[in-house]
Image (spheres, rainbow, N blue to C red):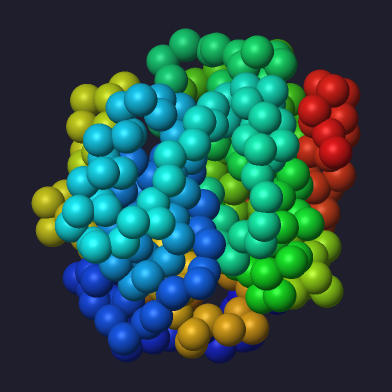
Length: 317
């Protein structure tokens, strides 16, 4: 269940400076099949490297597969793991999500919803008409999880890990105007909505799929300099609050692979520990989460709305 002021936070021995390699030490993933969206760059690449090093079969689900082939070959060489694949997936287009699912076979032990875009300057829409950041960061991942549900259930203990952001503080989900048809569009507001929705996805999976053995948690990876900031001019976070990609991937790897997370679901993590709710948006980069991003009622409503959206777009299963 989502945490609140009365529950005890889930804490580990890791923290802000921990790396993904440190988190994965002594964890064996041979026989586990893992999909990582956006797994060929940024923290997704570091996540893939560490999980492959632990023996997992890793699929890099990427928008530009040709560019990722060289990345995959380098991963095979450096990790010694030949079970690294590249598959095309454009999360902004539900037709691509549908094709990815149709081509999949066999159990999925971990789905890592890592890919994303940030602060698109002008209002843009997906081929199905959704605001681009909501459509890519959240709805594409929602449709992917829905399409892979039977493969996740077949794993008998699957995990879905969703990479949210402290950017969720900039907006809750605007249920009455998801596409900014009335509310003035702002790049960071749209990003905030998409990342609040991403956190709520883990709550929704907990509400709907726990009986299938599927657990899900969301996370804030921290401030890491990657291509994600191409529209923002780079990081604005103080230097002492920034992370390397190796540190930025640590919480993802923890949620994806660590046995200490067995049975834990519907929560929000940062710095390898469960975050605390805050009463207002912090201005000192101290973290936490807004209650609306883990609210069970919001999660249930978003789940139903999202099912309707992909059905109306003709991309439902």
